[in-house]
Length: 131
Image (cartoon, rainbow, N blue to C red; front, top):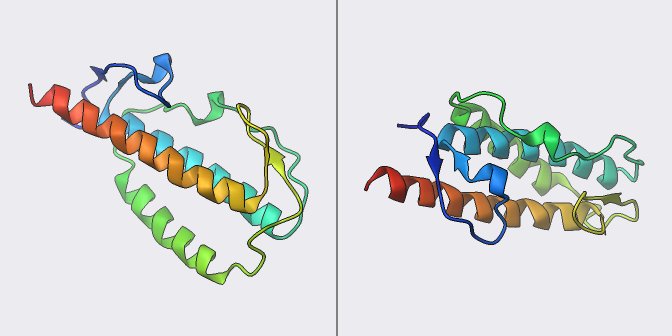
């Protein structure tokens, strides 16, 4: 069931190419995207310039495997990192491909919004699977 791709209706925050995902694909996307963003946040927190490009293509799921264990471990690590951060409003910024330049605080807020969007996506997939 976790690997069954389901076409869901469009809603705010979901791109058309992301509407035909499985739950595993969504979890993989969240893991890859959040891991990459956390690296950006760490660099900005240290007031380091982030030179690598941020790309939507890089965070598209490439497998239809269960990434839940990796995501859970990441969440634990990220929570610990956030507790330790003293610089919560960096001067350094990095642009998101769709938005303005974000500092470390903005990227952290983006992760919350990103999680919310994909939680809605998983719920929509589950509703379709249960029909």
